[in-house]
Image (cartoon, rainbow, N blue to C red; front, side):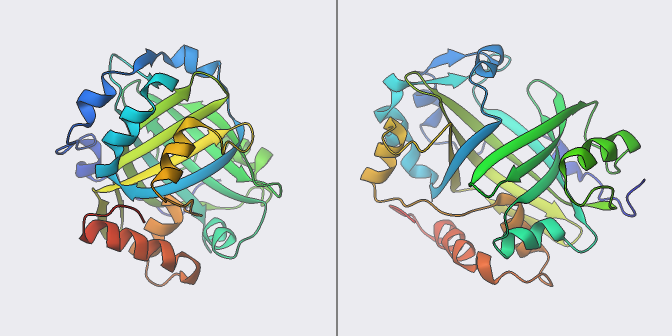
Length: 276
């Protein structure tokens, strides 16, 4: 089975993620002890609980400095900043998007993702189950493709309840990621910076927004990173990079559920903030 449409990779997305003026982050990040990709795999969190936060990236240096002794940082090819390039697929009627918009469980996201520093690419299916756990299944592939091959459909049909339905590419995104690993517990913190997204309707950029996700085997309210966030009165959000960026770039889609997060992003991009 083949997709009916393609969404070409724009040149601006292939050039790699812009780091911009990443303030004093580089010097702070360099003080963390490194962890390798193989060591990270020992902290497997394919099934996990996720908590997300949105904040002005200007807050990150002081937060990272505060939790430096409790976390290591992933390094790939000697670099702590990991550029990601992702292409999301959905059904012709945007079933995955609307499942999230309407608060359904389980719900799914289907994507191809390239980890630029290692050049590894995967087809990934993410499920949010009825117990609020995130379960990720993935298949290594040669590279991101604008069409799904038969073997891709076969893999997806094994974990996606709609089975063998036509899927189309709907949006690209890219960002820089920092990955922190807790030294004391099964917890991983990802910090996404310089996010931008593209589809046939245009391009958006959230250059000053930090998207933080805490991934753990169970609720991690006592972790050092969570405590640092809570001290600054930053509250968790129900946020999807895929859904919010698609809503902004595809205005014909219903997006009422995402309007609060869209407003938070707008405020973050318009002014310097202490919290959102």
